[in-house]
Figure 1 (cartoon, one colour):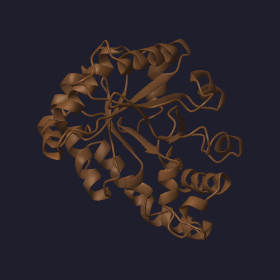
Figure 2: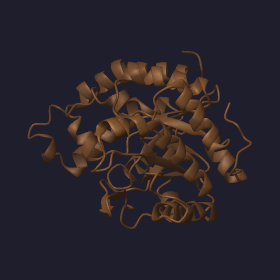
Figure 3: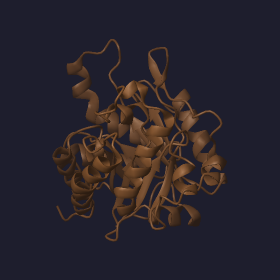
Figure 4: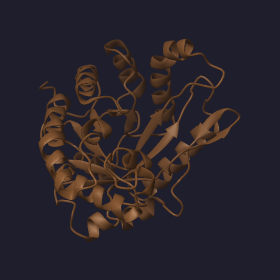
Amino acid sequence: MIATAAANPLTTLERRALQTLTTPGGGLLIVAADQRNGMKAAIPDAPAGADAITREELAAVKADLVRHLANHAPAILLDPEVALPGVVDDGVIGRGTALVVGLDASGFETDDGLRYTRFVPGVTPRTVRELGGGVAKMLYYTRPDRQDRDSRVFAEMQALIEECEAEGLLLIVELLTYRLDDESEEDYTSAFPALVAEGAALAVAAGAKILKLQYPGSAEACAAVTAAAQGVPWAVLSAGVDHETFVSQVSVAVAHGAAGAMAGRSLWKDSLSYDPARRKELLTARALPRLQELAGAVDGRV
């Protein structure tokens, strides 16, 4: 079960929204399908190549991913540019599957060597409601060794958290840390576990109430993230690793305080096809069993 006592207590509306994201066993489980260019690249048999896939064709792929996979999960994370409002208006998303709407645009901008995400143009917490969503998600790149409570990223997180709370909308704060241009791979690898934990602490200080984080690398590091989160639920993102690796990571993380998982490519990256019949076959026979196994890991049964 997800802890209810936290540094940033949930409102009644937020508590109800969080409940819609959980398995019957109480673990957090969301299928992530808000990728745009990344999802195009996972369609290997497009006749003219991934770059030529149209918005309408990608929307059809996303609809099938919802239809054959995500409707078997507590929740689905989708983008407001391609998938929505189509999957709602066309009745694709099941009545028992909660909708999380991503606010972040593809890519990032840089300023003084640091990365910053942008909002999808015109998309706000109110837009999430209008698209049928009950939860929002926003991605932030963080380097907490160079960013503190006086930083731009802290101010941006805090402002959006407050805006979502005013809208009665639960916000999932996703954090990605990254290697700096002047940093060696060895130095970054050494610093990585602490960067994940310190990023969580920074987001909690900004008011975050639920976190989506990279796997910090070990049981000890997961325990450190849990301590840094101060009772705020955190879920592991799959970051493109293979399914078996991700299930193992989630099992370790859950055993050391994580609330669950938000899985994208580890579930479906090799189960997409340009052909609808083949797509249904792959999603049903390959991706769906993975989702079921991941649910076991989220609930501590794997």
